[in-house]
Image 1 (spheres, rainbow, N blue to C red):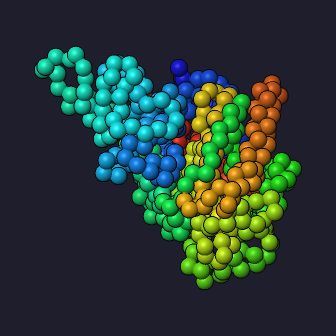
Image 2: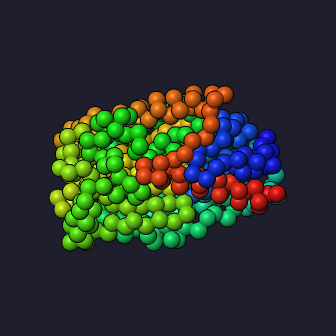
Image 3: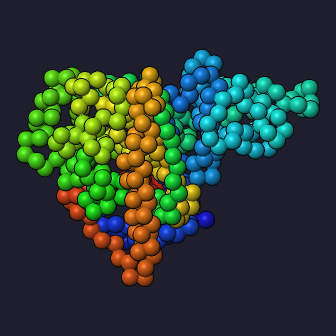
Length: 402
């Protein structure tokens, strides 16, 4: 069990603008603290509305040690529940994706409707009242076809995120997309190292030679290219097309539409679209990338032709599961409008390279010679922003539980 005074001391040791003290990257008690202070209190992106196409469609995943299920009810409303039977606590829905008319616990067959109400509990007395034994709800919000959950009793404010992101994301029409592919990757590294790596491109030229062809690796802050005039030309073109670009941001989120490298219209090896049927046809699909990111564990890229999602879920102090999803237009036909291997190649390679970088980072952090180092203001501002956010959220949790 974590010691709040110890965590507070570690946070106080962190020098501004520097990476974290060693224990915050590899200690088992700190992992437990992170689950309580960060993952059970934050908004987490879990996927897309199109993954729940019909009443009874569900996604089941585990946050820390807490299994949850997100589903579409009979009225089309997306709901979330603790995936724990109100009888003796067994997990009801197996991890993954599925569809069920009702949720039936595999242990003693207690049965719940899609609104979470207990509708059957065999061999209980006639006086048994099912009403107080509904599934425990969790907070669910949607934005332009994307789904977010929060397990806290009182979640952080959400409206500003929805209001600011919707105009940028709605043009990608994610409610008329389909999930083309999903992959998972186990990384033997602390989740914060995984996310720091995902919040900067300082390493990209050396670490991601294929991604660097299309991605502006020299970009600063909100992925602003350093080529004079490129941003102004791009923004003028987007304004003529009626596409907002941002940047917009809040305490736990950021979003911007930014130009890719000259001559590239998609995040692909050769710069050409990966899907013939566009998701956003404006400007012939040459609309750069809309990147939006949610602390603590997610980033996304919506291009003219496809959308990519990256999410990292910690399962131990030095183990993180990375989930990647690719969306295409709902009418795009595999083998006709897109080649699946080509669609997934660039980010699959990038994720594998990032896994190696994060695991190597973890090995070095274990060293008795490790000392927290300074972030580059030019190249690592979003990585520093992430760590600053982590420290502030952790401090708030400690103050609230002192």
